[in-house]
Length: 266
Image (cartoon, rainbow, N blue to C red; front, side, top):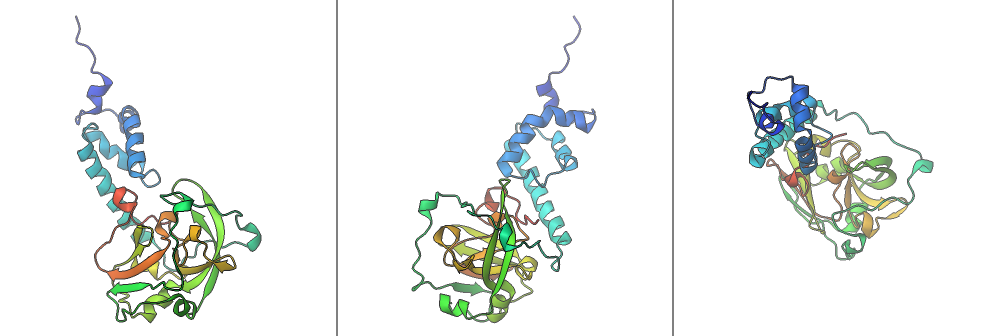
């Protein structure tokens, strides 16, 4: 009896497989799709990068996770290198605004935090000269700017909205932030947290948002303060901001720490 051919399962874990990468990837496709969903890297993993997985034991989750995390960090570095701080996100006319603008969070809309604006205080810490808190009147006294830009969600949908607030660079300069620091972090009243690279924080369209349309932010969109970053995916736009800090240590983020690509530029 002739020797039986190796099964697909055998080939999938064989690091010496010499077949063309496209054939190896075809064998691994179900696992690759599962891993892509797990780490939400569908938009940033190339076929060439995925070919690296053909040398991994696809049943070894720890091994594969390490490869994907390394690839995600590599993507962060490449995106940061390619980022043009002078390139603006597209803007739109008022007639193009999405109405109603969708709600999206890791909780249902009725669980959006109920914050008393009269007692709200924004905390500031880290590599800044002035660590005094800010109330809403003080924030509104700063120069304001309006933008109509597109919010793009990692889930595949997008919507156009109008936001008005303080250019974030203006705020960072006002508090004496170290603009040579690497990161700005955000802590939110809904337990969310996120962070930006300093280059994106200083981008002219990055904004501390106080108004949606022509009215104060409603609770579902981030009252009393959110960050609008039209050069990033939606999850990099934290809502209900309670504290801002400047640091040289990457603070991560709620979704980033679960596998989302950290830089997530558009």
